[in-house]
Length: 238
Image (cartoon, rainbow, N blue to C red; front, top):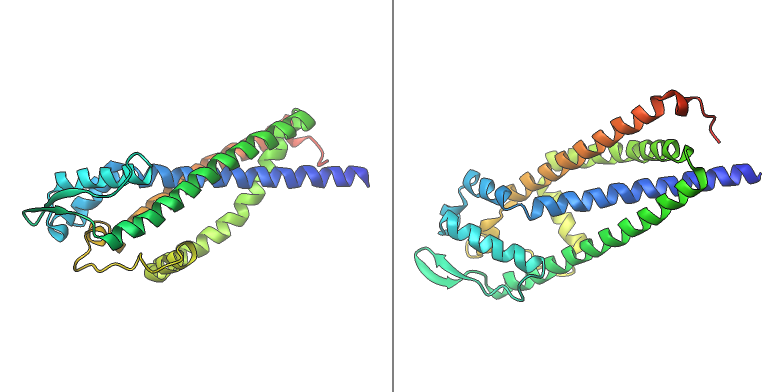
C-alpha cells in the first residue's frame, strides 16, 4: 500500500510540474508576442492602420511603444500626444485610458503568476530529482506527455471555436477577465480600437497559439526521445 501511495504521489507531483511548466511557457509566449514591436509594425502595414487612425506609421509605432511601456510599468500614465489627421492632440480619451488601467493590472497579475509558478516549478522539480534521482527524467517525461495529451484536446477545441466565431470567443474572454464594459470601444472615434482592431487580435492569438504549440511539440519530441532510450524504457513503472 505504501509503494502505491508513493507512486501516485510522485505521479501527481509530476503532473503539477508539467502544468506549471506549460503555464509558464504560455505566459512567456504571450509576453513575447504582446511586447514585440515588430509584430505591431507588420500588422499596422497589413491592416492599413495608418489610414484608419490618421497617423503615420512612425507615429503609430511611437505611440505603441508608449502604450507598451505603460503596461510594463515603465511610465506612469497614458497621456500621449501625437499628430492625428494632421493635428496634434491627446491620442487616448479617458475611457481608453481607464480600460488600459485594467489591461495593465491583468498583465501585472500574469507577471506575478508566472514568477510564482516558476518558483514552485523549480522547488517541485528539485524535490522529484532528490527523491527519484535518475528515474526523475523518465517520471517528468511521462507526466509531461500525460498533461500534453489533455491540452491537445482542449487546444483543438479552442482553435475550432476561434475559427468558427472569433468575435464570440474574444467577447467571452473580456467578460471573464474584466469586471466592466470599458473594453467596448467605438471604432469611429476611439484611436485604441482603430490601432488594434479585432483582426489584429485574431492574428495575435493565432501567433501565440502557433508559437506555444511549436514549443510544446519540441518538448514532446524530447520527452519521447527520453522514453525511447533503453536505460529508461527498461525501467518498471514504479
